[in-house]
Length: 482
Ligand code: UD1
Ligand code: MG
Image (cartoon, rainbow, N blue to C red):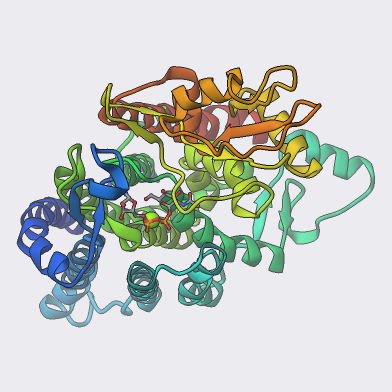
């Protein structure tokens, strides 16, 4: 009874149309503006091509800007559609159909657009001025403020559901979480800190899983489609038995009741209005960014897409599910931490190394001309033990001229490491593969062609989305259920 679906979703149908428009527009706009970007000096060498950073082909850079502008323009034109039922009700029957204008939804929509505009601007500034890494990390904090304020204003939740075992333990030690309920803990301001950090993570994590043709746009496309699929699960179009199996009938979360009130449906519809055209522009851009790339996204696309994901997830109240769609990015970010925070040297580019003889990519290396400090050594040895990096060690028994690790290093790197290494009596780390998921994959599956590596990352992203759905709707209802 309570799940009887509304007959149609006119705004959703319009949104599908906008998504197609987003795709077609992105495919058309990129080649038309590329030359203008090159003329303004916005171009970068394709480092994984013959010649690399010296004579590699120039590719127009920062094409995320026209993509973001096209998307934001479309989203502005879309604004009347979710509210069309209000206009028609007012026109036809003013006494019966008069309904309060849904100010909250409009504010949610507009604040998401504001965050997107800010993220695009900040990404563009980064592309122009190449802001230092540690300075650009907190940039998205600023862009998140409008979204968070609206979240607060509409009485946003700050509580999380605890697994059954944890809540029973809490009950057993006599703690009471008050009105929020036995399985729910209200995190208050801590939850806002988490929400504030979320856009920093989503934007930067896409930006650092980068450097080979297509990989930024492909991951953004797969995440957008995963979010869209998750949103569709919340539309009242599914049989009740199917929903109960997915854990929607779980009484302690009260989701069925919320659903009946239409809140959850509204939030996920709003999310769909944003992610469908986002998937459209990402797919359209990928058309030109696919190997061999004719356009680079620049930081603008990474910031813009990352912010879009955070904004819709915050407004849609599904930030924890969003995090699950970022499993490869979490892996890459955690692996990168020693380089991002200065424990291990972080070169300007950590992307894989191109071997012109085989046309394949190999892991890029960070070299240590002196024995690295103890904390670096411990970090790298631990990562090597976990199979996350490959280390080259000096061989004290061999003379410098025929040192096997250096010979092997030459093979992996394709470049000749420094020869002025001090003669040591103990083994020390000479080089390590850079701490990224791309290099990690190359250590275990490489050498690979650039396109194959990008496809492999895409396959992992899809598999992780499958895992995310499994955790969210399988494991989630088991752990949190009952
Ligand atoms: C991030 C990474 C950096 C990586 C770079 C590649 C960290 C801390 N930073 O830096 O290691 O090398 O992204 O995007 O992890 N490029 C290609 N092929 C591509 C895409 C980019 O060769 O498919 C090169 C081009 O020279 C382009 C440049 O990367 O000009 C763009 O780098 P940029 O986005 O400015 O680097 P960061 O985001 O600072
Ligand atoms: Mg970048």
